[in-house]
Image (cartoon, rainbow, N blue to C red; front, top):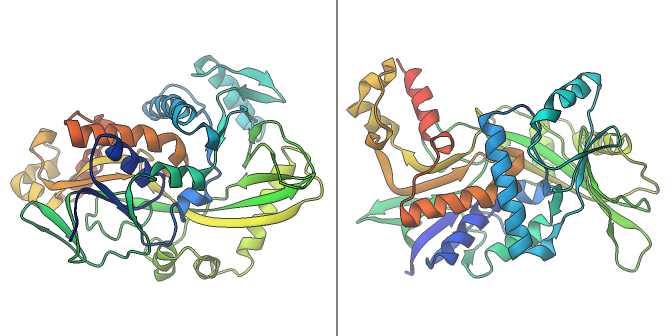
Length: 387
């Protein structure tokens, strides 16, 4: 059995970026995924839109701003062939939203100009999600169609399915958290549908109003263009069998079972087309592709990065945490050499490289993570509810 320094479970943008930085730091890395292709679930569904978060100053906005600056620079330097940087126009969806936009203007973190009843941000970009993820793990060992049935920790090593060995294990499994048996690790799948269309309309920049509309990409041997439109947002019964099966196999058939409506895909397609036409004229439209996946969103929308806390052992040692008594976080009992990167929501390609770089620096060099992105905050909230 081959032994690795790190095994990364999950080949979406979080896992691929983590594997990339681990390999860059000189580690022996294997990335595994249950599906037969890289970024086949949420990361391939994503349109790969990179856009500023608007709003008044707050901790989450600061995180997204830092991540956007980092990731744009990263893509430009390392993978320019998979990046389109033509800017984005953010347009208010109604009068109430317009008033919010006006209140945000003094707090913009990026260069902008007023344009087309909205704000044009030159930093706005789009990445080719599938190609990018493939390239990120080009130098790593890979194992697809690999379903993990058993994980054991023996003699400071993780053993997967009695055949793969690693000194460290990193779980980047997105909305499917079936490998984590910790109730505080609360992920809410947000299902979304994206469509790609063919049109003879040429769009020069990205747009975002009630949906995102990409710049046009010229189709080979044609006078028409490919345009991406996304995405819808749906929540379903988190504990339903249909949702668990759809997370494991995100097929059109399973999604129809999950939504309990055979017309759901058709309806979402029409919804996206109508929203896109409200942004820009689209002529001679032909549907090219439909992609469906589940974004992984934490209960407070912040990501979850770092070591997992062993909740029962920690509460056994410090039962007064339930009553709100402060315990230094460094005293929490954590699973040895087990790390996570999850809860990126709909901003995976903004947050992914930025957080992966921080996580790898933490794992390899021992640097401290920002407290507001670790799992600690969710554990503490959960513990207090156990009183």
